[in-house]
Length: 382
Image (tube, rainbow, N blue to C red; front, side):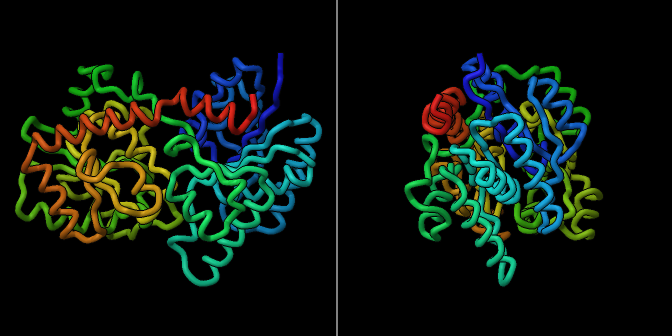
């Protein structure tokens, strides 16, 4: 029996496994029928087929396009009314604006916006004004705003992005939690698979591997990381940098930097990887030198895999570790990054201890089923 019809609105299907993932199956058992509105792609079709979700292919562009955006809102309003959707959940700034506008115009009573990050933080001038105004409009149209980390909640309140009464957080943050018991659990990763990966990437028993997972863009601190890498490898042997993630056109790194990545022997670049767990097993240290985040899921995954973590005090990042217990905060300077890397490279027992504490931190605070239960009770009311 279907008790609720819930439509998730996103701009790209790539985010669905991270933002929602197995929530779909979990809540379906409670009488929810799910729909997804998103840009057309084979990934969207495959994902929705596997999860048994109804999909609406909707042209949601990242950039502002008034004619296209109005057309998307009109199409979405018609769909919401025809399917008699009960709850609209929108993600990302553009998906949020389109989804909340359509939900408001269609008269949907529960309009949920997941604030996954604050793009205006690293913007200036007119662009910053436009992005902040869009956040405020989306927050105004929503009936509830889920902030994915304590620092996103703090800034949302300080900047009046939506009324304090609307803003909520799930436990200590995140939008989906982490499967630390099964998926991100070192003891459950196939040893032969890890050995094969080490052979493929020429990682010897003497090598120490520093890992990064994320989009290779300026906001993720790739420039600062590679500057530090050049400095580190002047005096340190048997270290390799493992970079996992796509290169994107928006906020892209320079062609010179990309050439350096692909032509440097001690840098391993894999591109996009779907199953990350065995790749975390290749790493000794995890680093995310990001300028801004909502809540960095990759840090939670790395901690669950017992890796010590280096990250910044930027929004979202500062909520993802406990300084000097599960990792170290870094300044975005080559000197500080190298200093913190060397603390782990020169002290294996400290790296191991922080990794173990990190896993305990994740299990205690970011269990998936606890987050899903809170979403169902606090957000969906089921």
